[in-house]
Image (cartoon, rainbow, N blue to C red):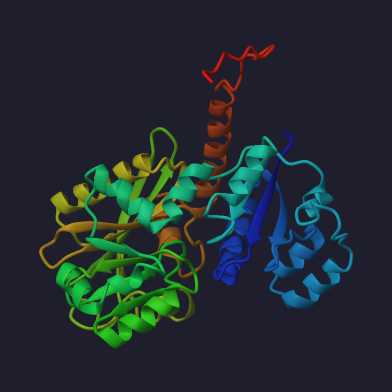
Length: 378
């Protein structure tokens, strides 16, 4: 049997570059374990250029990246308008793209637009699903209008931020808030704020990453939950996972970048989460509803906050969940009787299925013919 050729793409120019490399290592191992696919890897350097497969293999193997990138860039004709993506030709044609680029390029819809131009199948959500879900403000607006419970919020930009003093914020959202860059991931550009000084600092930090900033109320006694969703028209929901960090809920602790990717030795994980039957059902249904409302396909992780009264609030979706050794998404499916190899095989099948379904859509047009312009009153 001829093996399908999979192009695994990782890296990118976002703050989650190194996270992507770790996720890609695990996805590579899982795809290889199936024995069904021929895998070609492409790293996207932090300058936005795709590297050839040989250079990319070295980076995936955790060789020092910068010398590899520097050597590759010496071979690039920068006068070529397609220079940034020309390396995709270095291993011939592919059957499907498997993007593992977190943050910019991968989760904002950019790569998906490229795949569509190339008319190739790919794993994961379409451009519009990624783009809408990556924008925290658009996500909350869609959740709200579709009656999917989420926290109260305010949106500011550099011009309107001065209208929202700390006193005005607290009167609307409470004494503790989270300040978030609207288009960022993995807790980058996010701050937990409880006074005016912290608020000023948090706004400045978030505005480094986006010109639109979301300010959300904090959930009292918060317990964080994560749910995996995979599939297209009939998606599957994983078991629910929970995690807490020291002083979370009653103190200042929260699941920040360090806890997610650097040192989570103090994080307590619980899979499946100990929840009532009613809350379990509600969280899973909310995850499914949001997946469909946001036009997601293939895979996603839905993050929730559970308040002190057991009421769940949908925090945000992640359309390209981390797959590092520390990522809860990776473990949720193990507890749902879907191991890594089976999971990637299903994700690839979903990609082919979605591509085939979209081939039946019509993009034909009627020729306009000769123009016949009406008369205008003078």
